[in-house]
Image 1 (cartoon, rainbow, N blue to C red):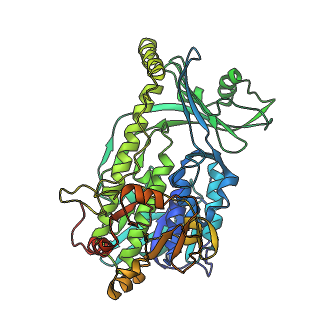
Image 2 (image 1 turned 60 degrees about the vertical axis):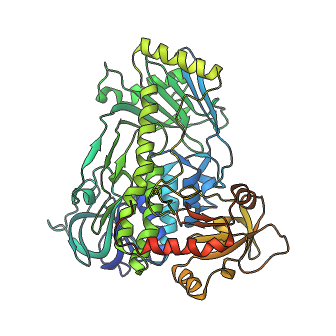
Image 3 (image 1 turned 90 degrees about the horizontal axis):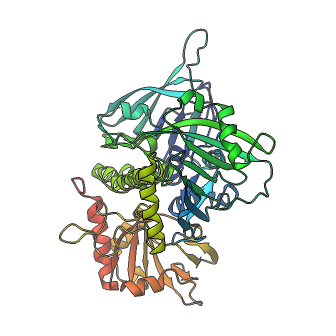
Length: 549
């Protein structure tokens, strides 16, 4: 049962939880829902009594769409997001330096890049959290103290109006909550991180940008390109979709401007006038100045305290990976924490969280900074050199930009070769296509479910002994056969409707894949007789006595 309770007297609120999540943004709610869907009791502590109503993040990629859909939002996502379609870079002369076209599909089964409105996504996540058994949302309560003990954590929360304490007859009410673990999803100024001994690395990459969210009155106006980056040293600017029915403009602060004068409505309208946007044809929903940073915590776990999202890292927005990185944190952490709580894995499994996520995170930050240095170039001579190089690259059909964060892991909970590197496809992001399973058709996650999955060209039970099958059942590992036989309709038969799985397996010389709950490949088997060894490798990983490197 989920209860909003600012007074602390509701019967739905409990003192004891498996996990306490501090912060009810997209990362915190994703974390809570994923844990509760695995049967965990979760308390979400949020100091703001009501959700923040204004836009912030506007981009999520196909991997994040798949994660959000797996929470039960598959029917809601198309109503709050739209495919990004394109992304064009132009210089101050209006010349096209680069143009990217994004596919409407991907190997995750969702559009490659998506533009959305964050308040609508948060509302959908909170609505979902209200109906998933096991979640309490404690809005209007701020985490103010914690004590870590050998078997759990005591978290003290106090009534809050968000930006100030709530006093009743001059006294602030407090409450003590207990859980086995506490996860800080509480932003850049994280309370939970402040109670951990973890160093912060800061690349010193900082720029101030004015961010404007606008609702055009003419919803039929065509914006071409839909998403535009203006690399003009006179004023680097961004013009993109802000989600269905919205547009976003971003303008870099010039050396001659103060943050105060930049962050004025009259300044916003003056800058928007060049785009034929004015109070007569648009509503300025929000204007604020952000300071983009590139920094991260060295460790995201200390004992029973963990951090995720902006509490663990912040990055410039130029690769659109800020919120995406936080949701990847949640997907990586929650299945591991569930196995530890259930006793199926040792606590050492949690040490792979920082190790694995740091690989993606560092690349995402490096890419964001790399793009930012190109975009934010203020020197006209240096910008002219950049333009000449990018125009030459375009003529030669070279992509001058680094790729998106690689959807691979190089260490952690994977099958590895003797030299420690991943074996075969281990660490790659798994594919998702349309299937038929037990009479239902749709994307794999929605009809076959999520979690640990062993997909093979034959029924895996035929090569596994009874003890191993029982172990798989205890962990919830689904043993499935991928087939293209339209007559196959057994309880483990998954019909590959669009050829997403079988041709890929055949081309790679594989007959089975073991997939993690976060959709990454644990390992593969070239022959069905190798499948028992694949399952044994996972069993060994989960019982390691020391952290995986």
